Length: 25
Image (cartoon, rainbow, N blue to C red; front, top):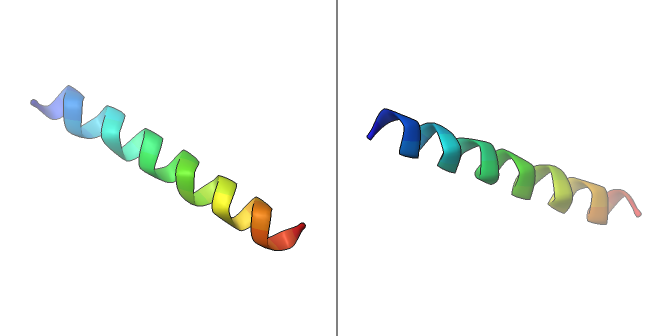
């Protein structure tokens, strides 16, 4: 269960990073 939450956090952070990149462009 912890591994699943951890992987979800990683994908969530990647999604936020991509959103910020799109805003900066």
